[in-house]
Image 1 (tube, one colour):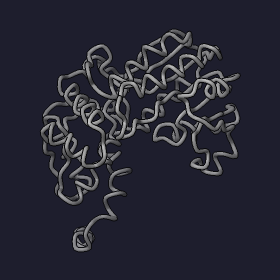
Image 2: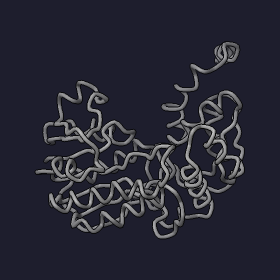
Image 3: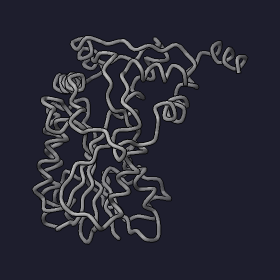
Image 4: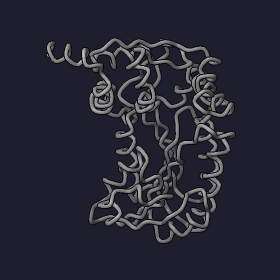
Length: 308
């Protein structure tokens, strides 16, 4: 079975790729910079140099492929049209998939389909779905919750100020999902040949959490004071601008959090099938704590050691 993996160095793509390195699969990847792939990986896969927003390159990569793992790279902070970023990749995908007659596609999307309006990257992913749905392939769109990995961007603030902040109230619960669980769901669909049609698949994580609840969990795992502080939308946008973000990019993230606060996650009901196992506590211990530990002040590290 031949499978093409896009974004093979991304958080989800690299996990999918590693799990596919088995004798029963022939794996091809498309990568802008193949050197970013570990050498032991490059030796086991076929590499097509290029980007998945180029229909000709993607078409060559899809030759003879049974299933495609499709993930649009995250937009840069300098992006001036976030939704158009996703549409550009999707249009190339639609053309290449249609011409190659690729049988099955598994995409990474977001929850809230049908309810989200002006939700920045979430709306971009939903536009991507609509475009790819016309490609002729059988598709499973994985509609994911808020990635736990988003909290990694707050590590510096956690360490320096003891604060996690987003432009969203602290009390509104949303699905929170670990990318390891998303990769596992993607793999289950990629390796099967017995499905047809187009369907959205919710990937919700183990429970809905508010940001206030999430930060309380992280505070316990990190064993240091951390609190959640809702930041005004205009202040959040100014902070992003100071970090080099375009005004459009900042507006798109503000819109995303506004729509999450409005409850768009209820578009996909939680079921036993959509509930995945990795808890925020387990994720924080495995992924967040190793990043925070080296940043502890010496005095704090010594205190923690004595308490242990």
